[in-house]
Length: 400
Image 1 (spheres, one colour):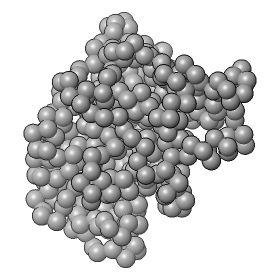
Image 2 (spheres, helix red, strand yellow; image 1 turned 180 degrees about the vertical axis):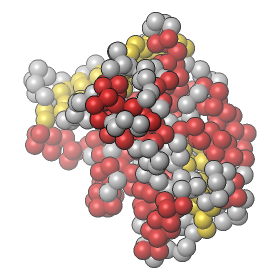
Image 3 (cartoon, helix red, strand yellow; image 1 turned 135 degrees about the vertical axis):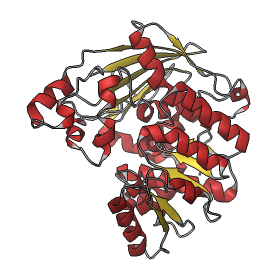
Image 4 (tube, one colour; image 1 turned 120 degrees about the vertical axis):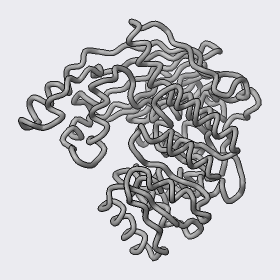
């Protein structure tokens, strides 16, 4: 484990539940977080991991160890690329929290290092393992919606409270990005599942262009004035990231995806999770469905009426481990299933559920959206991180 704070501590707790996985070493310069994670291992009856807490770069000593097969990286965004690259060069598989990296060059660096070393580099997009996202993937693979034409994905989550973090915590490092970035800072939660429904970066389609615009940047400036005390470092910043980032992605086959980001305005949480095909549609928050031949498509099948759909199309992964995942916690169980799949794939030497090219494409929305906003909404082209290899990558199957 590199980074055992807000996010990494969840990974520690869930890995500790698995009898066939062991945390042998942890690195975090914040000693209290490292000690709490060490205590969590002891409470779980696991061996004591080695701790590396001597500054920001002590993770390098962790990577020198022979008893580390894979590294989970749960650190601030700017560290994802150097730590991921170092892990792979040391012969370890790298599993990196979202996004994979935050610049085009850094994303390319991770892709090229994964190719050169033969090590996995997978972004830990937990939402791909949510119960309704897995259900939707299965419905898509069973062609219930016909040919897929359009998707909608978002991360709309009021996180202004994080601006009160100063010395430690997610807001202590994430807030400042809103002062010097104007685009979609965090695109992958909604986009990852929709991209896999559509088989993007696999077989016959990939991301092509993105056009982005931002609304005025008002919410965080107002929150800072009204909620933060005089002298607070985040009261002094001028926030320039628009309250709502809206992007339209076009694929090479002409399909479209609406992608939105807003962590600033008072609004209930949503990721949209909408997929539209020629025979029907599923929309999320709350999950509802309309399919030709399943009733009047002018009205949703929702609520208790979805039970029959779940009974027939529940994803096998959720059937197998959903109860254990919900008991484990972690965003409704998605975190546990994600990490369980990582361990199972490593043990069986199977391909991961997500390629480095997919993580790269989902993450590059951030710098491309920023560039498009700065250019007045001009379309920006997605790099083909696979350089054509996506045509030989099979669609993600319905694994059990």
